[in-house]
Length: 240
Image (tube, rainbow, N blue to C red):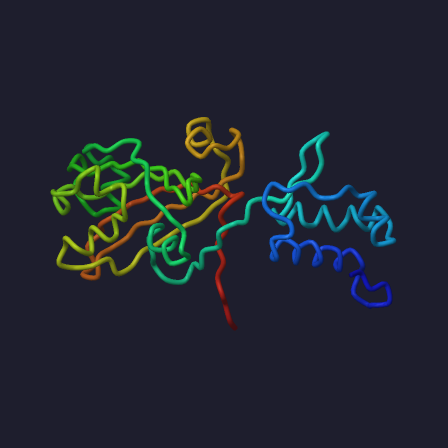
């Protein structure tokens, strides 16, 4: 309940109350929230205070508004720690989330100058180009394009690409994956990405590029991933 005698701002108390209802599944993804007037009358607080609490939760991505319809509970975001090198499949399975990949395209192509420089190979040498939609509990979470040196993974098949490529590498090469360099930046979904991710064109996304190496230092993967910003977030613990 709202405690008007508390030094804690009333809008913040309402935010925490709504968050707790979401954590307890009293409010679930897709549920409509009461109107500002209803919250105001229920707790005896001003509509401006209610509006501030709701707006903060919308900005945090926990709620979303639909014009003329109201405010709704958003799907919960999956949070991934930036420390540690895990594949999408390993990360989701570690959370108990059912995951798989829909392979959109699987072929061998000649490496262009950029791919060759990242994988430390000769331009025009063959690489596997694999385009996949990464699924979690039936929801598309990311659209990913991966490049792998064909000469190192000659037995790789399209069927194997529906599962964890990292697991395949660990099982079929003498040296497992040991390190990676990853960059993350904000972007917006183009028409193709939006179609695969089932989001409106121009929606915010997280654009991630990762170059991975085996423990012996051999470059093995260049991956470009487009993650839905409404369903995924990254976090890191830092200290001074």
